[in-house]
Image (spheres, rainbow, N blue to C red):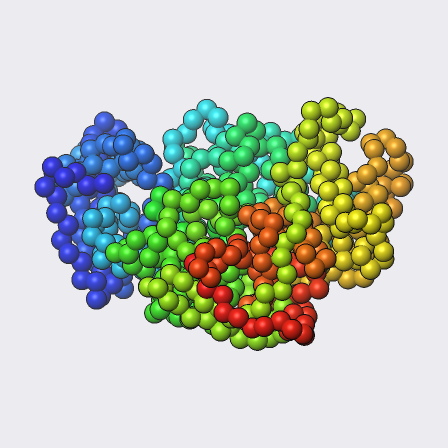
Length: 627
């Protein structure tokens, strides 16, 4: 961002002493050019400053400021933020006491930390060191102003919307129970204020949430470590805790879906922004003394996978300051901008497997529909294109035990690009279904008689998807035996419950739940009365929650050995199903040339999830070379 022709040169920081630069933003009138100076300080110095959270904006749209007396180019978004942050000059003639004037050329500077100006962006060594201490920089700041951009007509009422919505909720001490119970109680006992939320105009909030700041990965750290965070949109301000509290209270009253579906024309980005506020709230909670236990770094990367960053290395580095393993990965996996993206991802993958003696990394899902721009081995996740499917193993808790508690037997070769892992080949993929999202509605398909065409299309697609899965499970048989039906429904659900009990295996009552779900799904609208649906509501919801958590974006399959499974989207007929020692789940791999394999991903295969593969006679242990 520096102006090569300005002649500005950064004075080196003493990196051994956690030295940082701070920016002094000098006061000025609206039309004055931005003027500021840099100074060096130690993080332990008792100096008050604010740390700005913002998006850089378009690097092609630059404006000139004065930095240390020299012209210096910054993005237009940063220059605009500086104008709003800058204090006006104090008048040289000011009233002082009754009937008196005080003279003097008084100034009001503002001391800030801003990454684009306080870090020498052309020095990779300095950048690596400064990024490594950014958590401390933001936690030491007296406040974190969050610049969301100029106030425009479409977002003008966004802050007022948040404040007004919060005022409609009853005091938390008055309402108990789960979200649905809270909602029912409040609707029946309130005096109408709370009910207004269902006809509320959420569009201004949606327009605000669609702004770029809510998509940026670095803001997670900046908000999470802030003592106090303040949203700024033009001249309007609002405490960060207000928008965080709104999402929390909407969730506590089971209203998240209702609101996120009514955020206006910018719906996709607005819904993502809404979810990102929830994610940032979770990360901020990890920093509280009595907050939730901090998950492992791999889980945090998955939690933040939808956030964006310009430098693909930052998909890891922006989350680096969190996790329960921080001391370990800071020592063994330091931030290093001198390495390429491919080197960074390979180094992280090797640290995850060998540093932790774990194969959990192999459960990180990559989206096969996106073309990778990186040259990576198939076993190294591409963090620029992670899939939105939930891994079968989350938060280091696995309900499965495919290799009966064995330890990984792994090694690297060919310049650390080939992963050798020992295990057993069990079966092959024989028949593949579609993902729910890819189930086609062919011309002439009649839709259910529902007024909402989107809901009608989704319902018919869901019906066709379930029928396809049933056909695969039936094979050449006309009906399913009780044993085959149990194999079918457990495979459909990956034999696990939905949120919030995602780590628990499905229990016996899910047999009737799944039957109820099938009955409801195949019933045409208007065919049954409300009591019929009410009797099947609990089971249908339980199954839908499990399907949403586990089956979405996976493909139902049958194997050559007659097993049923859910496999990654990128699976092909003929792919091998294996277990690797130390793995909690089976994996899909594809034979290529010269005895090597391409790694496809983790899978659920019924009858292989609890160590059964270790008991099968005649299976030879072998070493698989994944490249």
